[in-house]
Every structure is written in C-alpha cells, then in structure tokens.
Amino acid sequence: MSTSRAIQRLRLVQNSLSRPFNFISSSSGSGSPALPHMELAAADTDPHLIAASVRFATMATTTDTSKYKFNHSMIRVKDPKESVKFYEFLGMSVIKKIQNPDAKFDLYFLAYNGAKAAYHGNSFVNREGIIELTHNYGTENDPDYKVVNGNTEPHRGFGHTCISVDNLQAACKRIEDAGYKFQKKLTDGRMKHIAFVLDPDGYWVEVIGQKPIEQTENVTETDPGAYRMNHTMLRVKDIEKSLKFYQETLGMTLIRKHEAEAAGFNLYFLAYPADQGLPSDEKTSHREGLLELTWNYGTEKDEAFKYHNGNDQPQGFGHICISVDDLDAACQRFEEQGCSWKKRLTDGRMKNIAFLLDPDGYWIEVVQNDKYGSKYTVES
Image (cartoon, rainbow, N blue to C red; front, side, top):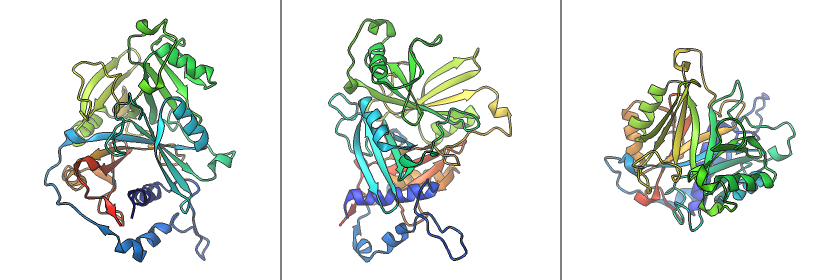
C-alpha cells in the first residue's frame, strides 16, 4: 500500500469525526440517517488491505517535546479552485493533495516550499506552516453554503492565519491590485504596520512585515517566495489554563507577549524550537509555526462564556496539528497528564492519529513525524 493511500485512510477518520458537510449518508429503513461514511469500515476489512504489512518500530519510552512541530492549521472551504488560487497568489504551493471521491471530500495542503522557504524540501509531516483546505464535494455549487470565519458573533473563536512578507507596502499593493478584498488596509485605523486580507471564504489573513515598516516604505517590489506562514490565532477564555496546557502539556514555549490594557486584551505567541530555533528576542516575523492566543479580559470570570471551536455547527475552522517524535509515547504522556480527547490513539480502526481537546474545546491533531521513525509507514 502506498503512503498516499495510507494518509487517505487516515484522513477519512479525521473527517468522520466532525461529520463534515455533504458526506455520503445512507438511510435506514426507519428513515434515520446512517453514519455519514461507511466506506472506511469496508476498506479496513478488505483482505488486500489486511494482507498489507505494517511494520512497527519499538516504542520509545519517552518523548521529547523540543522535537515537536506545529505542523498545520485546517479550514473548510467552499470552492477549492478559488481558495487554492488565492493561497498560491500569496506564494504558497500545494505540497500534497488527497482525493477521496468515495467519501466526497478532498484535502489540499499548502505551504511555502520554494528555494527561500524555511522548510524547502522537507517531508509533509516534518515541517511547520502548512494550511490544510478541506473541500466537501458540492459546496461550490450550493448558493446557501457558507463557512463561519470565526470573527462574527455568536461564533467567534478562530481568528486568523498570518503571513509575513519581505516588503509590506509592496506586498499589500500587489494583493489589492489583484482584486482581493481587505478587512483592514495598512492605511486604516491607527495600526499602520498590519493589514488583513480576506480569502475567498472570508477567513482573515493577517499580513505583517519582516522588516521595520520605515525601511520598506519606498520599496515597490515584493517576492512571494520569501514569505512565511507565520502564525495561527485562536481566542481563549482563560489564559492561565491555556498557557498551562500549551506550555506544560504540548511543550511549546512562550516567546512573546503583547499587553493592550487600554483595549482590554493580551496576545501570547508560542512556538516549538523546530528547525528554526527559539528567537533570542521578540523578533518573530521570520518564523513559521507560531501559535497566537488572544485573551480578552474578563472572559475567564463568565461561567457561561464559550468560544466556538469551528467543528460544532455552523462549521469553518477545523483544527491545528502537531507532529511528534514518537506518537505512542507522546499520547501516553498526554494520557498521564489527564488530557481531554476527541479521539485517542487506540480509538477506532485507525491507530495512527489522535485528537486532543484544548481547554476551549479546539481540536489538536497529533501525528507522527517521519524524521524520527517509520513506525506508521505502511508498506505493500
């Protein structure tokens, strides 16, 4: 069995967990819908698949969180042609596409992968800064289909992804000249060093500069090959609980904090060392794989307050994903720390992915980084 086929089967579990739009469903005699996708069970009982050999390496007894990577962020999209076109315009490329016609969905994984990219040439799971687009067949032709972008009440939660660019003013002009809409232009408001462009589904993409804005004011050229997929932002209710989880449980490091007391919120930026190392100062615009947590003062005191995780209806954002050095050891450690799970490694037929829940109920996929072993490589 090919690695691509193995990943396809893996993703069937991922999508069946959330029961996304337009999954195939059969109807029982009583008129009640059956489970949204039964082909997975058939695939797992196929004698040819059973005969395929899966060689397991010896499980490590420990796991090193400094080897973890913030691999990707997943969002659902209406029309993949328009979405891929947009992200490719921003300089990203499709590094993997997984087609699942039986289950009526496709997955597109985009990242910066050119000669100047931070992870040029790395394998799919041994990198950071990937955006996963999930497309459920038929949504592009449904006039009523619309995702929630996470920034409108009552479904706020996920905030945005962010790219850092070489020359901020030139990059924003290029985007505007191409006809894409902005939530905030550089010239809007008091914050003149950030912009927010809207992707085809209305998700916010922050645009920041890798250099001080004064240095690029008169520069007219920009090279998308030098861009980075810098961070993903999530709003959190209780910052103490969230920081404890992401630092002590997931092993990330808080590398920058921004306090905006007058506006009533703080921003916290976390990262893994990964291949880039942790910054010695607060200059993080050159990095990929940062997680930004936004805390609005007082939410932790409201028992009824809750952010939308993107997987409850109506849907939009799906999850973030970390790749780890040893999947068994990592999940055992999470278990010992009393983590909440959406799917344990031992749940279901597919034993090579897990989904944690963070304190706000956001999903965190956990996968094996192939740099550290081939335990989950499926061979025909």
